[in-house]
Length: 495
Image (cartoon, rainbow, N blue to C red; front, side, top):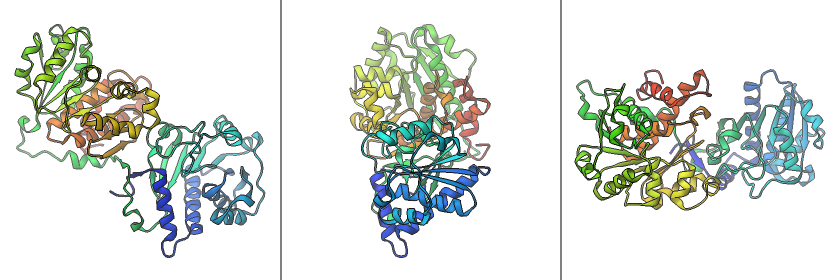
């Protein structure tokens, strides 16, 4: 796993930092200078017209990074103000050296400092934070967040848990985060994406060998991954080569979810797509999309006959909670045998109430509320540590789990884990999850294993959502996203 995409816990990054300082020719002062240079370079890159820089310095090496940046910015001719929340004589090591090199005044905090700044550097608290932020630090962060000023966070926004993306009482809302040596998992899930802003990785030219023996918690998905998962098709290919995806849902009064999932499966490249729904919804599901076959499930006992023709079954979009849905779910549990499943929406609600045996070939796609029901905990507990919640889901059901949300997480029962940092708030709307279900089912039908299909599905879905949001996030529909899937699932042709 490449360090550029590997995700680490805070303690592991601190160990990487220690190893880097122990390497021949590298010391804490040299690393601090490199970190400060990376901060300064990105300050000039993203805020080239800024002249007045306020640097908020706490204790430890994070504060030292701030002092070192202040010295570089001053030498470049910028007007620099340092605000220290810890006395310099309480600093040690490279942080004290950086403060002594700065040598200039260090003010106590006041609102006037914010009034007289163009941009703020957050170097208050680092990855070692282990308790809620309180007292003066909390007051400063609250004032900073209310100022409207652009903020560049050194390594991680102060108050954000580096492991989980949870807020430790109060946290800085940065517009840009320059993170060092290793990517912190908390930057990419939970509240991390909202508070970190744009994340720039600065590896600081540490020796490559320092990563050996430190297992990352997972990896960050990249758009280039799709080219490996979705290679060009052979010229003599036919629809039978790309699988038959079946979808089960569309209960009484709810044909739309199944229709969206089916359209997404078609756009994601399944060779054939068939839908099973409540008999009264057949016309509504099939109308306007003749490429998708649709049949009414009058009697749940007929389900095995239909499933004999399936390569994968996506179950849940619009399934409902009524008697028809209950009989269908029960028959599915009795008859699915080794057929790979993708379970979403009402399928997850039925799984929580009436579980049956799943396996590593199956995929669950819950949002936090559904995950809480599956795990028997509260939504707050799920969100407190999304990485561990996703792992718990995969372990409990022995299946691949996709925990949706900002920084969607894909976890396999064998311990593999990936995070997707793409997507946008416009995707917080009806039908988006149904579209994701269809995409994952299509990739399973085309031969991808469960974990790879889930990763590719989440990534393709997010990238399509970002393409659809080019005209604006508010008012983005699931249909808009589905219309962008064709470009995304053909890497090299406009992604």
